[in-house]
Amino acid sequence: MRNRVGLISVPDTVPIMGEMMNSDGRPPHQQRVDEIMSQARRDEVRQRLFKPAPASSLPLAMTEDVLSVRLSEELDYIRRLLDGIGDKLVADPIVLQKHTDALQGFDVIGQLLGHLSAVVAAADRGAAVERIGMQDLKARLTRASLKPPVAVERVFGSRADRRSNGPYR
Image (cartoon, rainbow, N blue to C red; front, side):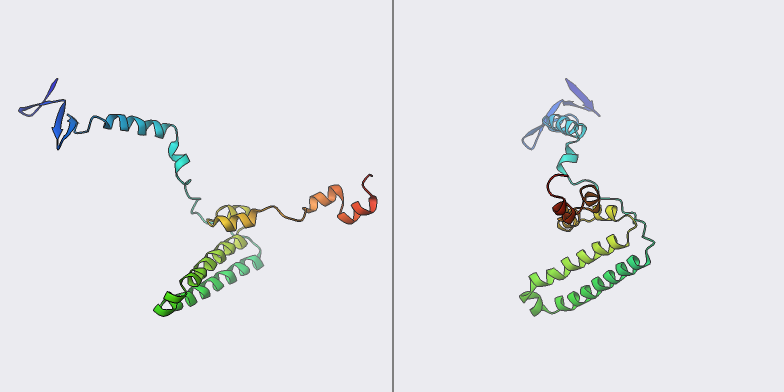
């Protein structure tokens, strides 16, 4: 079968630079590639391969607790002070060359303080912790407690009560 383009009759496939091309300008294998990609999009493969979309960029509601807000502001102030010190140290090429790893610590500390400040200021601290991008900090903040919660003591009694009552009640 031949297609007419203007006054020229073009076959379905035309060799261009050693490769056969369909009349629509695509290599013959491109249709198969398009089918595979279409199937992958339908099967939501992309969601399994790539990071999830970032959390909402809208700020969380701030707590009404004045002390928590002030603590958050102080943490931000400390972060800014450390950033300033880090910037001054980085400006010196000799210090930068000798202490690169230590200077990167200033950046990590600044990130930690920023995240902690956001958690302290948030009305919903659980949601604020979920927004933390540093996985190690998030894991430390959400790890299981070594001490049983107060509700457990209400049901089973304190350790002192359990010791005094013996193993059977």
